[in-house]
Length: 155
Length: 233
Image (cartoon, rainbow over all chains, first blue to last red; front, side, top):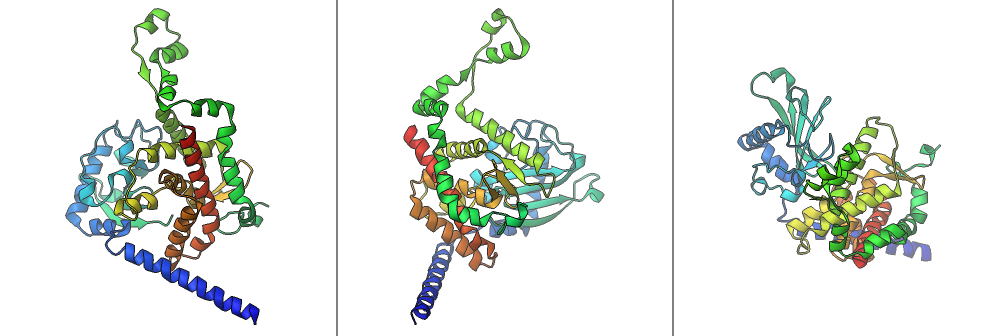
C-alpha cells in the first residue's frame, strides 16, 4: 500500500508540476512573438524578405565587413561588426543584440568573400533560428536568386 | 570504448549525474586559486586596463625589430582586457570550427577554454542592462544565451574529465547571465527545469528532460563563475 500511495503521490506531483510549468509559459508567452514566428512572418512577406536579402548581399561583398572579427567562418553577431549595417532590426522584430549573420559556401573565408562561392546567407537570432537564403547557383547570372526557408533549432 | 559508456546526447550520464554538479562547481573556483588570476582579479577594472595598455611600439619592436627612435615616434594604442578575451574566444571558435569538419570527431576543449568562454560571456553580459522579469527582452536574452555557436549537437571531451554535449555546455551562458541577475541555485534550477519541461511539452523531444541534470550543472557553474568574478572585482 505504501508503495502504491507513493506512486500515486509522485504521479500527482509530476502532473501538477507539468501543468503549472506549461500554464506559466502559456501565460507568459501569450503576447510574445517567438523567434520562429517572427522569422516566418518575414519569410512570408516577399517584399520585406527580399529587401533584407538585397541589403545583406550588398554588405557582405564589402571586403572589410567581416574581415576583422577574428574568425574566418561561423555565425557573426551584428554587434561584433565594426561597420554599421543599415537594417532596422527593430522593424524586423529581431533584437539587435541577438541579430546575427552567417555566410556559408565552399571555401568562404570572411577575410575575403568571393560572391561566386556563396551558397547560403543566414540571418536571424544567434545561431539557432535563421532565415536561410539558399543561393541558387543556376540563376546566379545577373541578380542573385535564392530559395528562402526558416530554420529554428532547439537549445 | 568511450562511446559505449555514452547515453543521452552523447554524454556520460552516469558520471555527470553523480559528480557533475560538485565537479563543475569546484572547478569554477579554480580561477580564484590561480596566483596569476588572483593578481589580475584583485585589480580594479581601471588597473586591469592600465596594466594591459600595450604601446603599438612593442609590437613593432617584437615583430619587426624597429629602432628605439622609431618606436618613440609611434602613438600608443590601448588593448583592453575585453579585446584580449574576444580574441581568445574567436580563436577558440575558429579552432572548434576547423576540428568539426570531421562530423564524427569528438571535439577537444580544456578548462582554460571553458574559462575563456565564461570570461567572454561575463564581459558581454556584464554590459547588458537588467531586464524586468519575463519581459520580451528578458526572454530573448535567456533564450539566446549561447556560447558554443553551432556545436550544440557535438560531443566535447573536456580535458579528459568527461564527455559533454555542446547543447549542455551552452547552459554555461544561461548560468553567466543568471549570475548577472544575481540568481541563486534554486532560481537557476527552476529556469533550466522550466525551460526544458516546456520544450518537452511542446513536443520537442524527451532529450530535453534528460538534459536537465547536466544543463543545470553547467548553468550553476556559469553563475558561480560570474559571482566569484564579481566579488573579486
